[in-house]
Image (cartoon, rainbow, N blue to C red; front, side, top):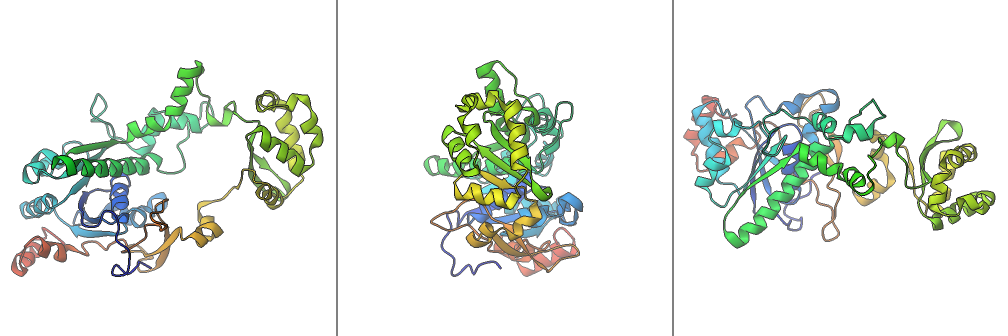
Length: 402
């Protein structure tokens, strides 16, 4: 369950206020990173709630995953009173985060140009589909930029582009937004002024495929899709093994090849001069890999995993996401933390969520508060902004806030 704030060590971003006007994954990821690192993050939701609270299927985990450690205030920006609350709240922030279409925030007087006149120290982070340019007014989704940015081509087979199995651009785009926010806050220490930061899905995707672009620049040869690539290593594959099992095995150096052959009793393969070096083995993949598949297929996945672990060779079981809840390493190292689900059929139930993949001073930034209920902190935040009880009641009655 969330830790006790009175006993938790001080976090690096404590004392900073972040106000986020976000939805879906990209913007909320930025806010989550800042929240996990100690900032007070206030999520501004429409009065009907962030729609990810009630998504089905692949979206069912969005809200509880990316909105822990935040406060919720529900504001109707279509109402004048609601806009006034939002502007007062946003102008109190060190950082404002948003990921709406171009022009939406300006429509409500919540863009950087308007808010920076009220608070020149504000850092304002836009999460968009594209950085300013010919594409900037297009509507972008993670899958859209994966297709147009080469990632889907690299993931699937030729003629069959395939998106990656996670919202990689949304999540990384939010992380880059948080990185930009922290860099701008550091610069503010010298200048006293905030600035506008932009993070974009398409440019994030291009950064991800930059290694393949550079491969072409260096070699003149275009990168082949991953299922058809010319591997840099002879043994770097998923192997079908005994009893219907599968395991990923890798041998990526000449020293590892020696260890592998010794461990598996493949002295004949090791003695073959055609396998003398890694590049030699890569040239022989057409015959070497089928022979390895035949030999390794006589073993169970667990047996091969034990051999590879004992000898320090790279390997991986083929895991499904739901199996990671029982992963012994995550369990032992505190990589999962409990939250209470705020919405849906399982509202009130405890679930485990993944933490930021880093340690600071030997500790993982954890869960201090559960994903909030809609408007859970509305009255508390209004009081902090100077609204008295009568004003708060009037806003509630007008449904300008919930």
